[in-house]
Image 1 (spheres, rainbow, N blue to C red):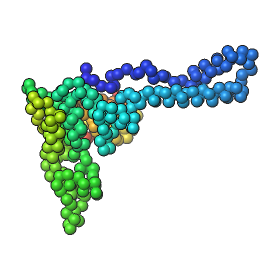
Image 2: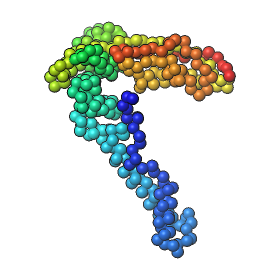
Image 3: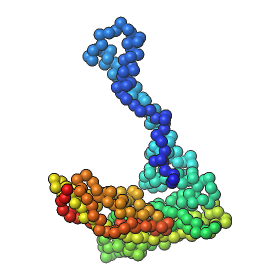
Image 4: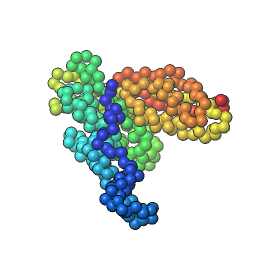
Length: 324
């Protein structure tokens, strides 16, 4: 089974909190100490005071839970996670979300136990450059290490504008044609063409491959007996077309946003070596109110090997009719 923080059980030290239970305990304690105090009503000042104490105890217990969670990699976030990662020699990259920092820290821990292991090279690759979105390390033969890279360069270029786009352009040796008052659209197209041959679907640029290669070939990274090769992932673009049938009493508005939800789910789960299965697509289209889904494309599971990543092309969701 692949290691995942999601596979870990809930820590027993984290207490499940219940205000009513705390209040009942306080009330029982109070009555035990003052058995003659029997005329307790909801409006009684003693009851009001016990309610205040119960709420404050609830807040205190929650603070204890939060403090303990901050020491665990699975729950830590923000500055707490920065400090926890720093213990393992990992620093947060610019604008890096907690999930990515947590993932790199895990790879650093795993890689430290095996000099030259896959986790070690994957951590170094993910740390080498912020443009690396995913990396998968394989060993085709003894002493050979192959690192396939999935890049986030394309989405970054497509989303950039203004000075941010100008900065990205300089990374690839391009500047805006100021005398011609080059627009963001035209300059973005030039940057995309120079960096990725006009693609932007996850393939890595030559600049990114060189940066990662320099990192993994360094004396303090590469094991002396290893021959390390850095390659761009092979991208397989897949267009999704689905005919969706609704129950008769359901509005067509159900289909609105389905394409975007598929893209969002794919962004969170896809990656190198991840198969795009027809069942995965159908499950995300089969929301409440949907009677059935007939997937037109892809017709079967798209299998990705260790150096391949699936990229979503167009996503078309058609209202095919109503049925029971």
